[in-house]
Length: 228
Image (tube, rainbow, N blue to C red; front, side, top):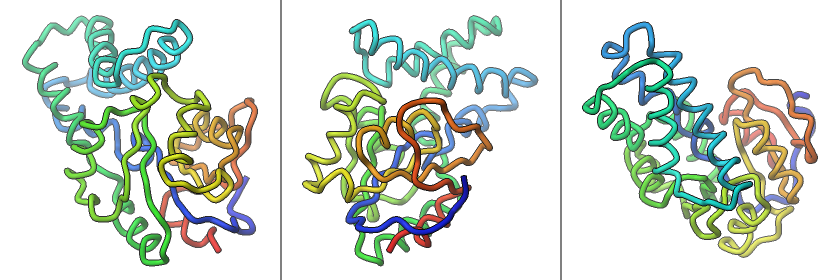
């Protein structure tokens, strides 16, 4: 799939946070020297287990907020790599509140806002986590609302999560274009009824799931050209 055609009738752009706006691997990146050769494997496993725990908790009916899930996933990654360092764990969790945004994000959001589009985040993150990430990235003046799954107590891709943005912005699903770098999230949002631009930063394959993105882009600077 490529950027072909346009997406029409959009009133609001809603963004996933982690991996889409914010670089989840930048937390470990800040402490790479302390992890040495384990840095990349720990970061990848941390992210993998973080997502797995959201899905598994949703299926099990045992919700915990994303801060706890993130800590649990880090503990698993540490155990797998035989790391016992409470100070490093604390510092990595703190770094997760101050993730770097991807370089093009501020300019892309500013362009969309200048065109009169409403901008919001819809994320698994807790309100406090999202507020911290947005503030750290300096994009708080561009984002109208941060929507968290904590409003419904279940994680993406449950349809109740996507409904939060519809109710909060008071627009129709088809008037929202949703952006995520996670192929499974793009599929979930499409199945719900959003228009979807999949931000395929990492060259993933498209998921074999219900729902299909309307467009595929490599980064967010390409999004304004899709919308009319």
